[in-house]
Image (cartoon, rainbow, N blue to C red; front, side, top):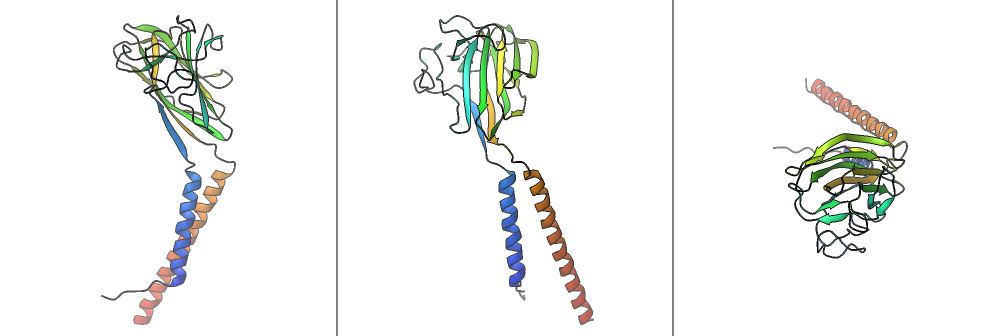
Length: 245
């Protein structure tokens, strides 16, 4: 069987295209950081590095934050959507919220019920957050509540309306909302007997202006170059066939 050497110019061209495409792919797929807040482990007390025993104590201030990319702020509010913060924390309970374990709920600093529980995701400059999903459930018996998602200015992005949170099966919400100014999850008016768990989000770099145009132009150039090479190769094969005949 005879082997055919590939001309150096062709090898170099192919390698150049290959490396260009790899570089382009790295630009397109700006690195994202996926996170899932399950409220498990040693996440309690102000430092967020102590065991959550007994249950019903404050979750640490920095739990869930990603240094340099995003701050997670948990709080318990009274009254309206941006009412007084009664406790700059949520609290943790291990069981009794349907099929969920280690659930965050709202309580004021004295331990009594708060009307609104809040989880705020604040991206750092140059980053954006995508809220993929979360679970809601009620403790020991069904309770009425409402789940609302806001932007940083408390403009409603999504709302469930008044719903019944179940104590036997959790409800999953999948908003798929992306914001660079922040996303706020609130639930209430009963956020003491209704808790949240499995908050799934992704933090990624905000695409730079013109990136889309650059990608389109670059792909176009690659396609044109490949097309020219294909034509040249076909033309060469035809010439060889003519010479042989």
